[in-house]
Length: 152
Image 1: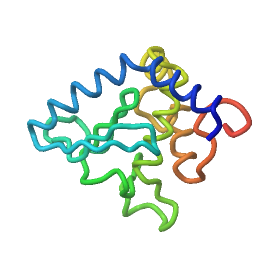
Image 2: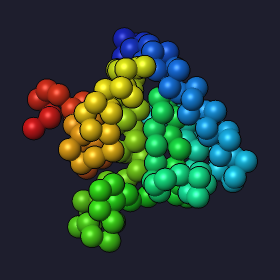
Image 3: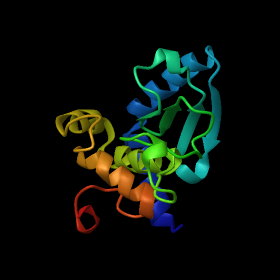
Image 4: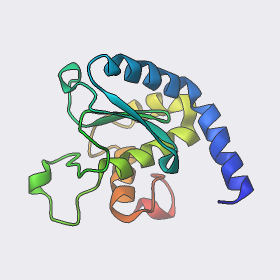
């Protein structure tokens, strides 16, 4: 990775730090209920796996800045974001890690504006362009940003 790109990534980490701090606080609280923390440097994220599902209105994952709260055992597992995994075609099921990595990158661009933009675009919905971009990125490794050449 080039020096300008690494510098840009670190600027993104700083820009979204308030969101990450909220995620770290919630992750640490989740550790009281059995969550396990891991640093995923390649993904620019801190993951709290096995976050207590009974504390969450949904099972799955929630990204806050560079922090991911995940109710499953590992982010390296298939996720059926809008449909149960068993209804998805083999080989076309995004992994939680890839989907959430897209959200981490989106947070690093939007910083403290991410949550207002996310909810203005429809929140947790298959119609939300941020969610569609995260799904596309999970499937292809490209197009984590919802607007531009990869957004079609």
